[in-house]
Image (cartoon, rainbow, N blue to C red; front, side, top):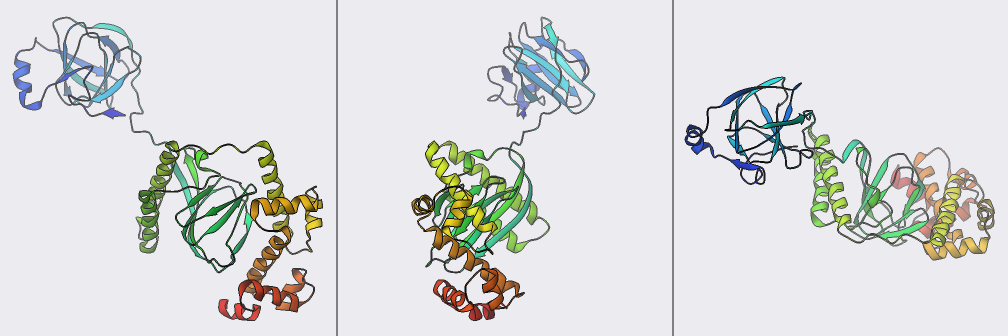
Length: 384
């Protein structure tokens, strides 16, 4: 990056002459040498005495160093004095040639050749490559999302209510204002308590540069400036003109950077013990099996057998980590699947009950009403 050339930034390398006094200073200096500088020939000099420099044609980069190895770059647009002992190099900025005047009683000592830096722009580490989805969800009481994994990252922010976020077998209860970020290909599911109808935001995206690893697997508590950035994203989405996609991506980038900066200033979570990691992995496998076979006849002994543990151990783990029995978990996932099938309107209620392995349509209807407070027929009327 090219630094602004002023007295404060150049301190330690020499001095900068104010424009208003430049003519007075020049009148007192030795006769100048005219230097034609080229990108292909950029020698490094070491100032033996005070050495004055000013640009006389083209745009010039002045690179200075105290040790001859680590250089700082300035745009030479003022008369400067390089103090004795400082290494310096002059090179054209984004062109092939330029001219400089050098004022000194003693010629500088050439110490080597310098390869001009082509990439002097401010580097951008975190870059969003693509933003795929940006949704605001308003869910019903006791909502359950069976789970998925995908190659892109996903951010979830709870706007109202509470939401359970389950990833790698760990259940995080997200309160209003909390956030979680799922890593690429990380299987996750979400659900709400029976008396909660959450509202939350999800954003899926991928990166062209940067690393969000410090944010994965944590319940994040964004500060108010970060929440304001998310609110600004929602306003842009509602407004949506030709500039809004760039604005949304820019705001998301700022949001992620604030979260990274905040994570650097707070203690990192303790790594889970090997035993806890193993328990989370067992729950994850059980959840994935249930989601993949939800339209089959499922039971706790069957699922336990398929993931090679005992039913009692699986029950204990579900209660410990998810605060729910595996049988109740299966029931909730099946009922959530039934709502999707009703919305698709491809099967009648008897066929849906049979497809989900209920013994009778009456059994299905009774469980549906117990969970959602309305019958399948009433739900169908509300969504069609």
